[in-house]
Amino acid sequence: MPTIEITLNVLVLGALLILSGIAGYLPRSYQLMRKDRQIAKLEGEMVQAHAELLDTQREFCDLEAKMKDITNPVITMNSKNTEDPPQTPLPERDGVRHHRATGSS
Image 1 (cartoon, helix red, strand yellow):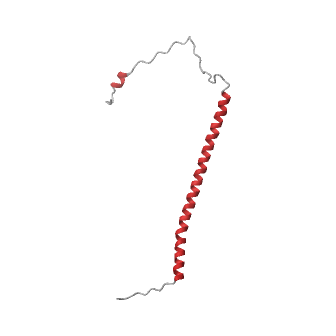
Image 2 (cartoon, helix red, strand yellow; image 1 turned 180 degrees about the horizontal axis):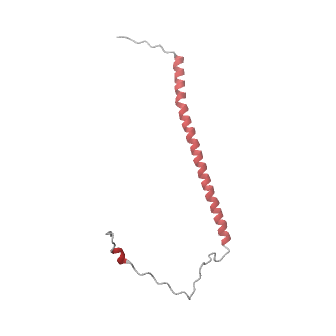
Image 3 (spheres, rainbow, N blue to C red; image 1 turned 135 degrees about the vertical axis):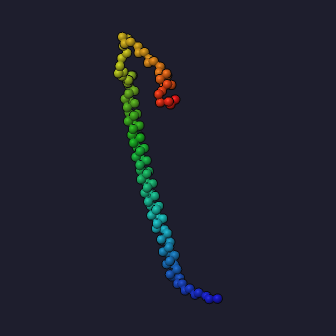
């Protein structure tokens, strides 16, 4: 039975282990750094959106406080005159719907 003899230097083996560790660590750390930046960006957008909502709510509360003194803030655009005749409702059109020329029901 033939035997194969392999000589391996311990220093070369250690260097290969260190290089393989670095080769596995660098892409993963880059991936995590990218994800952290993306999460920070999304958190910033959420904080901005919440700040806009709070500003709008504060403006609404200020407006509500100003309107509190007014008894009737609604101004009518038309006034009802007793001289105008009451409007009559339109006649029903059920017959037209059931007897269409297209044949659909």
